[in-house]
Length: 391
Image (cartoon, rainbow, N blue to C red):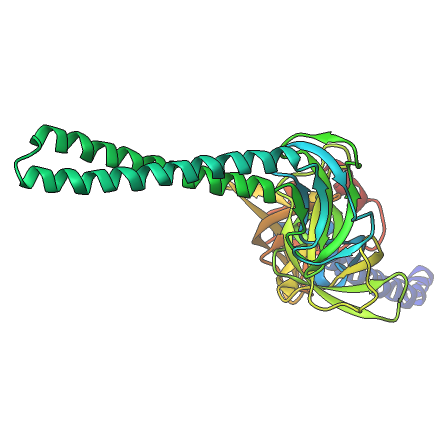
């Protein structure tokens, strides 16, 4: 009885422990179920991963004209600079024109000792006079022969011979007339005259000097047209074109602004400087503008500058025989391929067409990318740096 009462006294305690153990089991089972659910979710995520994000180095496209304005040092030069030469040889008797003189068309620049040419002209004119007399005499004889032939007092053969004599005399007169004109011309060539208004820029012969036909004597720069000569480096050759307008400021008058139009671009680069010579014709100029003065030529952005941009060489790659770049679509965060055309090389950059200002272009690692790749713009870290290094 005593033992039974003890058990009855202990039964509430045992019953409480049993109840608590059952609650603990329920807690443990719930935790295991939660872990199982989490594991299943993780497995589901592993089976459906999100798109891979690639970091890229980019550059925003800007209109080439915005930074294409360049200044070049230029020299004022005549459009036409002609070398004046005697058309006959001889000894220079006088040279009234000197370096820097302003001359007008037809003005005598130099003259030869013309005694020999005067004697030659006199001789030819004497021969011409004699030939004219012989021709006139032969014609008079021919008239008499014709009369005698009609009267049957002279044979037809004699008449034919006289006709041939007259024809020969006429031909002799014609030949000597041409010789006399040539002799007169040569006599006039003994005086060297300016072929246009201009300024004497060079003298290469002095009085007393014997010169041959065509030897340079004086150089004249024509003042009717003036232009500027400057050089552009070969990497800038594509930035200028024929007919393009440029702005000019004189070093002596910086406030004066002139306008010129590109007239000529050298077809090949200078062997020493590797630069291309350019000539721009001035549309107007101040009265005091002299040859040899210095000026600055400003090449402004042209009308097509909004379609021409420059990109690093590493941004452009070959695609099916053509050139292309990767453009970042910011809205979708993906890459798309854009075809471009390379028109020139500007240092370490290509001048290209086919892009619009404001577009963002990938400039490194382009060969490791594909159309539709999800990308993020590089803002620090190692991954994009390694991407650029691999390129």
